[in-house]
Length: 399
Image (cartoon, rainbow, N blue to C red; front, side, top):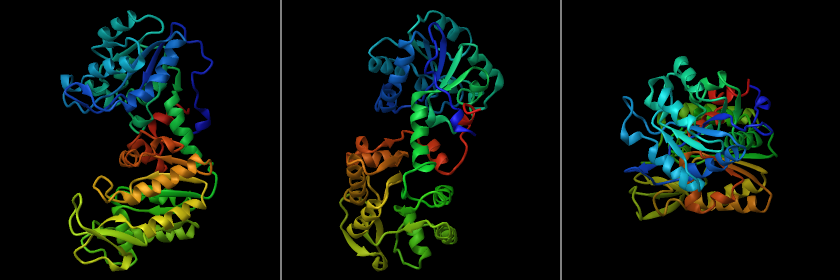
């Protein structure tokens, strides 16, 4: 995959062209009301740019996980209405994403108009990447623009198949994500630090293995750090850990050392007997975790050490929290490090890229999301990129 082959629609004459845009409109909603419009807010500028150039903008997206064809709960109709409000102009809606109903609705769309087609997953051919379904959707457009990096790890008909049937381009959000990740991993300013947290080592073994070959400092936090502490012979009380992966943790540490990558682990920890908000807690050094204690956050000494490590780095890649940040007071370690990274980013001395659902939630809770260089809205696609895997939706555009 040659990412330098990615093309955008910049400079193209789009007047009167039917532009199929694969977006990610899979937003949280309850009882037909969108409860978090962040993804919609991010996609609107790209759609309006195409419309301003005279294109007929036809938006494709999945929504939820419908099990057997169309159902009201997973309809994109309410999302289309919310998109229209954010765009400040009418957004039409078609009751299907292929066939006569979709074609008829598109035929009534004026140049510069925007229409959302019904949930692509209402058709079984979407997730199967069925050539016949992809061909039926392709018949609705003249050009294909994939602006859904967050769905690019799936080889579905509207994320991968369409790129082989129409002139295919990367949308602005797709390019933003790819450029940010390339900046952090392929051509970074060194030294590079990565913060990898979360509950389990098992979910991030490929990430750790890939990053240990690309970064200079690998800061490990969250529940997964406990497995690494176990690998170092440190008792962790009742804390979450994967004892069956102690050998794997050893292997990762040895491989990192051979590659010149320093793995940075906690020096002190916040422990409690109960995993609940406001539970009494104490801070101990790593070798003094009580037998009945659960590690729920990193301590102030660890935060100071992590901040010191970051002070000597020029690029930061962050995926996963350092503790149980959702429950007070066990988010303080994550928040303190996030704020330190944000301050350096604002000062122009650090390029900071973060992604993953828990990571974004933690940065939001710390109030620093806007201060990072780039925060990805992608989940699985972001993680697979960190693993070094080729994303089908991107590879199809980079032919």
